[in-house]
View 1 (cartoon, rainbow, N blue to C red):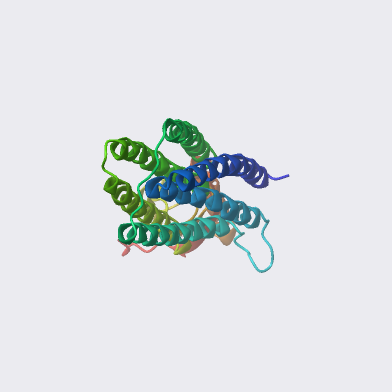
View 2: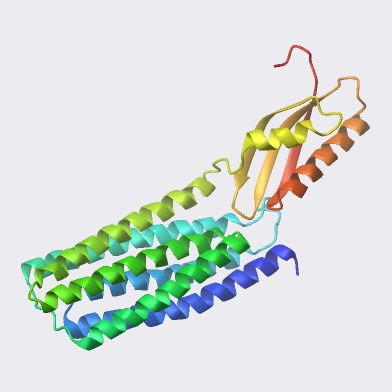
Length: 293
């Protein structure tokens, strides 16, 4: 088993554990919201349902991303992880629309929530679970350089603040301000939508091959290699864990092909040694001209 496939195996195990935790949290909130007729608790439950759906999509995307290179995918399948994150962003936007629609319906046909001490206990317990999931998933995402785990942890982090807002709403509803329940559910919808936009933007950057490394830093490494006169036209793309580098280097025009090729291999090794997330370095060799700037 390769290092990359083992990495994806670990990530998938993490996502499965988080999926079941998110499912428990989502069902708890939706059931509680239905029983108490609370729009804000139900909306928060749908938000948490989005987390569980994210995990399912993530598992599918990670399964595809972990496949080795083949004739039709010479650069590998890693972008499927970014595609999974992009779909998660779309789902979050759709969920926000659904919550807003339900909130408007509550305004037209108001219902007074039936709040009890159980509401505070359940919401408090779900916050504790979400705090654990968010911290654990983010740290593991950074450690494993997983775009999906990091994106999903940010979604879960938004759940924490949403749930805190819901608890505050429950308190004020008990004091005789039921309208705050509907207002809070709309605010939750906005938070869901903003999180979705953030996830969409992040994954779109990878899917559209935005530069992922500092070209100046790469150039400084390359020009230090003996025999390299200059380095330019540096391009990078890929994911956090799988970066492809393309660059042009100039060498003395009297240099033999064999010597130039040996220098290009040194350049490739130097870049990979400095950045362990670089999987491929394509070096274009050009003759050095004194007129170059």
